[in-house]
Length: 449
Ligand SMILES: [Zn+2]
Image 1 (cartoon, rainbow, N blue to C red):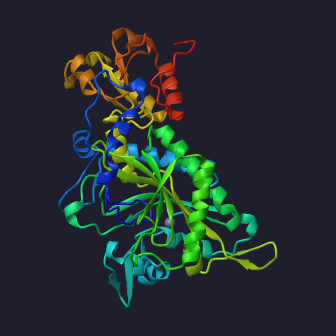
Image 2: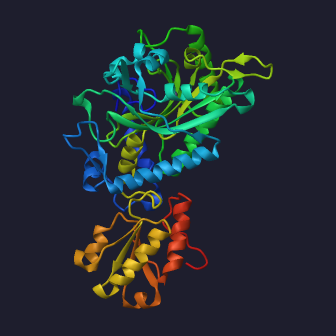
Image 3: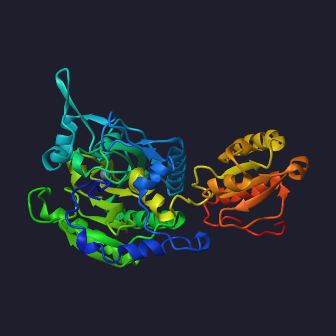
């Protein structure tokens, strides 16, 4: 809803944007794995509780959800996925603390322009520390802590880290409106000449990640400042950054709309908008070009001329916050995640107690191979009942007396397809390959299939 996972600000009016969003969300479901009946709009809050993905407790507080093991498995997989994509794109990861001294945010400009969204400072001896409202100031300090030559640029610094927003309690709910946010964030420190290429590359990374996750944006938005004093005043820098981002969108060939009043306080941004099942629009991914914070933090690099030069910061988030993207994926797939994201990938179904030891042995083998597997034994009901209970699990491996002797499994796919019994090792190898490729297909019919 209003939480912008990157460098947030309020999105005051969604109603005008909600007309087409629902249809497009429905279209984005992968056709091959869609049940015969069309699904109703899913509510991630309801599904999250039903599927034991996440929950909240009044004693932890509103807007502070916790992740149950199945939700945590989805989250771990997503985090691993995005870090891998980032490494391949030349990013290196850091960790930085979620607290910082108040002075840090005075320098960054958050204190002047964004304080109403921040938690109140905590007194710590003679100092005041604040839960951070964004990761940028920490990354600027990390860049500043070492001297950098132009040869090191673009320097791409990524972190999947925590940030906090003091949302009013009345608006909190599920994973989309939270007070503690885990953001897939990065800052590229580069020369002014490199900034456009870096922003184009970030947009490309966003498009690839969305395609792998099955996410279809409803639109791209060039978010510009509006009236009022929440933006830093430097018209020349705004103009320069806006021209650069317009150029980036043109070069990327994506249609976009400009929207006033949606910029970050320090600069314009490209927002990649998605919609939930009810048609409400959210910002998921962002790309921003920032000339302001490098000035405020007096960042520099040593140019070929031996002199100090000011870098540009490109802020970008590929999948936004893990809260928001998981909420979206829950609704998009109705809990039937692609195999690589599924909390449980393989359920082992011994027909009778006699096959239970073999099921346990195969489960351990799956775990050793990095697959998430569980056994649903006869104590949980008839085979039919257990298959129905495991209907969201992509691979259901039935083990009868003959399979147990032969070390084979009879696979049932989530889409209803049944495969001939095949050697267990071959089944795990083929599932493992599909999972490793982050594909959306449940099975590929090869020579042996
Ligand atoms: Zn940033």
